[in-house]
View 1: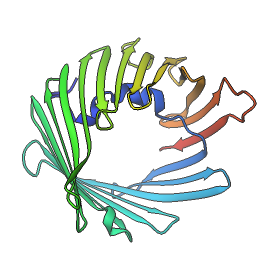
View 2 (view 1 turned 180 degrees about the vertical axis):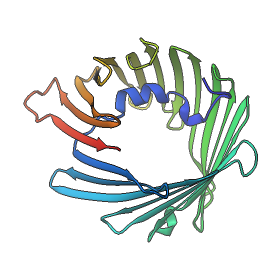
View 3 (view 1 turned 120 degrees about the vertical axis):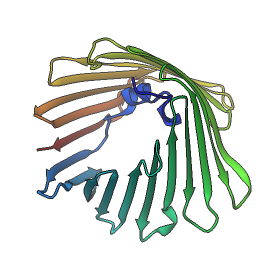
View 4 (view 1 turned 45 degrees about the horizontal axis):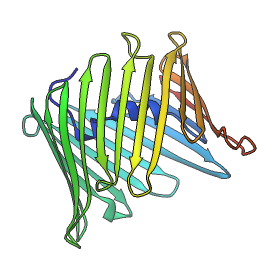
Length: 276
């Protein structure tokens, strides 16, 4: 495990990723290449329903500087500049989207052995300010985050969380949506490489008295293939198969359907990511 408590966004992230990451409902193809100058190029095409979109992304790293540029079929250009250790133990991230300048954001992160602090400011006339702080160690973390809207002078978001991490497991509790929801999750890895795992998550929304309980897991069929499943108390079942067709290149097939309404068409997705 890394030093320090990590970012607030890391609390409960492992369980969330196992239950949501790579579950797709569209068709996606991405191809990555590398130039002689060290620029990584990735072309992506996505078909969702009858709509097809695409983008081309370039990434270049030089010493402590990382530059990302993405151009999509909607003529949008997203540029992200990441600077590490301008000041020791810090990371600065600046992003700007053209032609919509109002989406620009400047974020600063500070990492300490027992604390992590992040702040983000939107680059517009009446910016929103996000602030998070996490205290603890690699095994125990306690944190909170809030968003302040300068135009109205109100807090638009506040969230608190706690996590306990061990080499083979992680438990987390998050109080979010301004105190309206509480989420508890637990993930347990079943092998040393952490390719097989079991996870459980329960969410309680106080305003509606609604509970959602989800169980899932991943199983390494072999060194090249992973199978994932998830099911919640509302009858939504998801399955995913991911296979490494050639080194570093992944084929992902996933499907989700409602077991209480089998007459409905299930959602189906496939993605192929080719890397050199």
